[in-house]
Image (tube, rainbow, N blue to C red):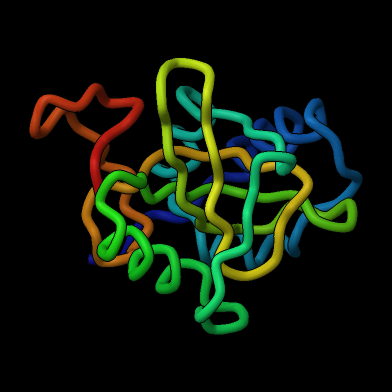
Length: 150
C-alpha cells in the first residue's frame, strides 16, 4: 500500500514552519508530495528538530543526489551516528534530504553530510537502517523517540 501524500494544509504548515528558519522557496509541491508522506509531515511538524549547517562536515564517497542511500550506508558503518530525514536549506531553497547526526550530550551535535553541506537542516531520526524515510520512530533498544536508532 502506497503512503498517503501530504495534504495542502500540511504542506502549507510545514512551509510556514521552515520559513521561520530561513529560506525563500521550496522544491515543487509535486516533488514534496512524491517524497513526503502525510505521516512524515505530521511527525516533522510535531517533533522536527532544527540544526545549523555550521557543524556539518562533508563525508566523501557518496553518490551525487543519493543522500538517503549515502546516509544509510554511512550510519551502517558508523553506528554511533543517527540517520536523520527531513528538509535542508541550500541557496534559499528547502529540499527533501537525509543526513547523519552524532550527539555527545544534550547540546553538542555534529552533522555528517554525504552530498553538499547545507545552511540549515530540519528533520527527525529515521527508524530502520535501509535509507527509506520511514519515521516510525520508537523507543526501541532504550532510545527515546526523538533519537530512535537507525
